[in-house]
Length: 151
Image 1: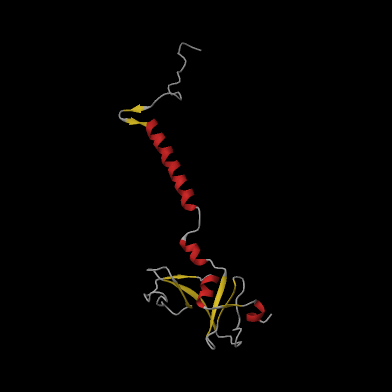
Image 2: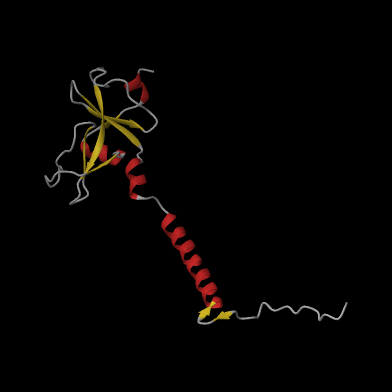
């Protein structure tokens, strides 16, 4: 080399960079701590089903016949074509109207607007797809594919 001194490594892993009152090591540690907390929160909050997901899941499809008022339900993967009692195609799929004050689910025909809670009489404010246990409590009888589809 010529008469110039070799460059010195000014920044080493152990060097603490401190510009005035800014402590970059502390900022880096805090940054990693915040990132770690965000990841933990996302994992904890992301686990499990949200209330919206739960309201949209069901194990059954419920129906009310407009002609004979028969209440019936079928497994989730079956969609009825007619009433099993009177064979009328005039059937309405039912939904659950959820009461905000007591969380009770009142089952009724879809598209009817809001209903009053069967338990407390207050207007309902939420919708859900009723599960088999809700449909049974409503008085619906379970039917199979042959009884509601013909084949």
